[in-house]
Amino acid sequence: MSASSQLFTRDFGLVVACNFLQGLAASSMLTVPLYLDHLGANRAEIGLIMASGAVGGLLARPVVGWALEVKGRKPTLAVGTLLLLLAMFLFGQVVEISALVFVARITAGISVGALFSGYLALASDIVPPDRRTEGIALYGVSGLLGFLVNPLIGELHLDPADLRFVFPALIVPAALSLLSLYAIRGRDHERVDRERPTVRSLIQAAAQPSLWSVWWAAMTFSGLVGLFATFAGVAAENRGIPRPSAIWAMYSLGAVLIRVAGARIPDLVGPARLVPPAIITYAAAAVVLSAASTTSGFLWAGLLAGISHGIAFPILVSLVTARVSDHQHGVTLTAYTGIWEFTALVGPPLFGVVADAFGFELTFRAAAIFSLVALILWWPIERVSARAVRLG
Image 1 (spheres, rainbow, N blue to C red):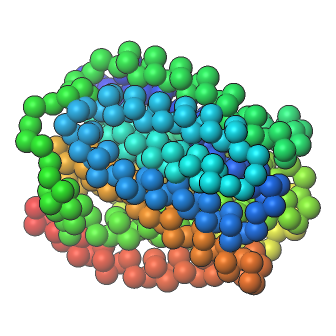
Image 2 (cartoon, rainbow, N blue to C red):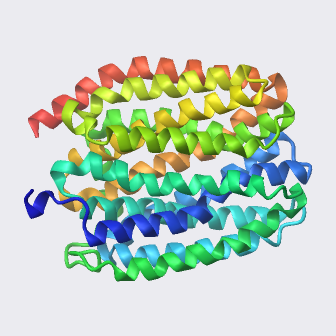
């Protein structure tokens, strides 16, 4: 194997370690809705609070995109990590529904937005182009393993009131990620000398026709993920399921297994061909979740959703980086993660209102139907984007 095609390098191992360590803290946000439920928040309020994090993430996206290209990957990621530490501390101080919970959630949104974009850009720099989808898929396993912090929290049998003590404890692994980050010594992950991007150049890079279908698929997929992240655990608890956070163990298991077993498949068959089965699988998970009344039903829903996540996320990242020039990776990946923030802003409050009015069963089924309709519309958009790629 040539050096240019070598995937498992020292720097790749370090970026995987970084992503896992900070992911332990970031993934604990999936526990926040359960704590808010304990504090007496209704479904609409839970959706609003969780969505408030997206406000910070979206507002910070232009700055993050600029910083990744001008200041470098590592300095941007260091600032994002420090903000994550602050957010974890603030969540530990929340004892009622007040302005503080919004401050903590917005701070977390800014930090996770910077880390999400930055580590994707850094991993894309490190993995060889001819193994990019495989590399991103295996890199992403480290983040998915962070989801296991939630079922592990469940095994502690904490009272809901004690969940707030978990967040400050997760400051330790997040802080350790800084050590791994600064041990990375590859090529231009620091500041680079090139023209500073303007707001217009950021918009132009993200608006290329070659990316239209990727944005549409990402919006559909991230909407489903946002629904699961906000309400799967709450729905399980409301239906009397013991240890509702166990759904995230199955989610992580499904995603990790599909990535380890099939990491090279997208590069062999073409990433775009796997978009439809990935979205259909997540829609199926939403349908299963809508009817689940037993632990096994919720676990099956989590497994299906995890398998879909394991397929969809790396192929969408691969499509973003493959359809633009190398110097636009930071900007376009920031736009990609910004779509996740946008759906996190719009989706949870909307889903919360629907769930309060009609219940979780209808909410999950409506989301599944919406995603399938969006997939039908994706095909003509993808033909336009694929043609733009061929024309260069």
